[in-house]
Structures are given as structure tokens and as C-alpha cells.
Amino acid sequence: MTATLVGATGLIGGFLLEELLDDAHFDTVRILIRRPIDITHPKLEKKIIDFSDSDSLLVALSNSDVVFCSIGTTNKKVKGNKEAYRKIDFDIPVKLARFCKMTGCEKFILVSSAGANSKSRNFYQRLKGETEEAVKSVGLETLHIMRPSLLLGERKEFRLGENISKAVMTSLSFLIPDTYKAIQGKDVAKVMAALAKKNDQGIFLHENREIRNLSK
Image (cartoon, rainbow, N blue to C red):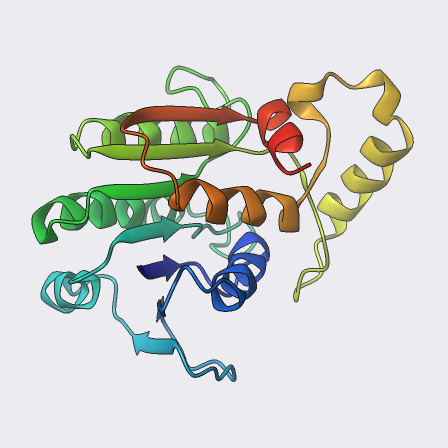
């Protein structure tokens, strides 16, 4: 299979890239990135993309058997600009799904979030819910939506609030429902790689508890 990954520099994306490169089932692993990264591998293709350039993105997705989208930003990175946040967390995944359909790739695996709900009062959960609905409407043959809770694992950038949450959620794990227990980013990536090799058709929502169980 040829796998295309968007979001390879993030926590889940970084682990997923390792999974795909180590898995003989995938003979070509293509990453779409906004700036150069120092990773080399015989079956790795790196394509630097301006995600606002639809023609370039369409060409970059061609001949993919599965497309993974784990892209996302933070309030800090966009300096509180909700419009800029939406351009990354909504516009890019939806555009990817539509272009998948156009290029004949019918398998799309999207990282969303626990609690995603288009009617939520919380901006982040509402945005994730709206993204899910828009991607569903594309009509892909196979769509897997991952809804992990707080992610565990070493990030390249420091996030104080997230680190505090991790400490609290880890120490009080026995009190937290499975839907919201923290989960290793590596486990989410492992499940995503496994799902890509299945021949199931339809729309599948994978809640945090299921992802934790599948990773075992």
C-alpha cells in the first residue's frame, strides 16, 4: 500500500510515521509537510506543501491507498485567533477528504477528539464535531474517526497546561471514565496503522475506550 500522512510532526503523527515505515504492508510512505524535516528512509517520500494550494495538494495525494490526517494546532500557536485555528483543524482535514475522493482514494483515517460535538459550547469540541460531520458528508467508502482523550508521550514543544492535566489525569486515573482516560499517542498510532490494513467499508467512530482496548 501507499500511505499518505498529514501531520507527521505531531505527537500521533510522529509515532504513526514510525509504525508505517516499520510495517512491510506499506511499501511507500508519503508525508505532506509545510517545512523540511530531518528524517530519511528508503520508502519515505517527503513533499513540502502549501496547504492553501489546492492543485499541489491534489497532485500530492494522487495514487494513495490510504490517507491519514493527524494535523492540528493549539490556541497558543494561533495566538487565540479562532479563524486561524479553524483553517488548520477544519479546512485542511475537509479538503484532504474531498481530494481523496477526487483522486480515487477511498480510505481516510482522521484524528478527532473525545467529546467532539458540533453543538458543543466548547470551541475545540464543537470544531472537532463540525470537522467530523463535514468529512462524513464527502461520501468516502471507508472512514475511520479516532476520538482519543488527552495524549501521553513526549512532545517537541512544551505545553504547561497539558503537562499539568497529564499529571492530574494519570494520578487520578482510577476516578476517570474510560472515555476520558489519558492515552498514549503511540497506542493511537498503532491502532490507526492496523485499521488501514482492514477491508471494512463504512464510517467508524473509535472512542477512547475502544482505542485503548484495540491497542492491546
